[in-house]
Length: 114
Image (cartoon, rainbow, N blue to C red; front, side, top):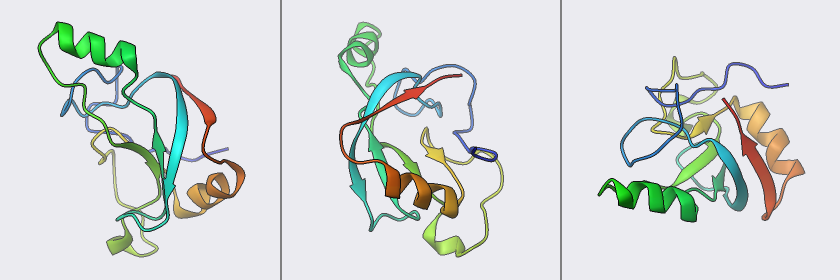
C-alpha cells in the first residue's frame, strides 16, 4: 500500500516525550488537514491524548505534539528526502499523501502500530 514510510530519527518504540524523535503508537484520530503546510499536504494526528499527557507528566516531561501524516518537504520539489528525517511525524511520498488526503476527513480514526 505505502512505500518506505519515513519516521523520526529514533523510530523504534512509541513516542513519550517532546523531542524524543519517535512516532506515536496507538489509537488516534485525524483531526484537521493543512493544505498550506511546509510539507506536501499534512493531516494532524490527535496526539497527545489523555494517557500520553499523563505518562509524560508522571515523568515531569512534556509529551510533545504537532504530529502529522504528510508528504515531502515543499522545498524538495518532486525529490524524496532521504532516510528517517521527521521529528515524530509520518512522511509519505507526495502521491501517497494525496491519495489519503482525498479519502479521509476530520474525525477519521487512525491506528499507528509498530
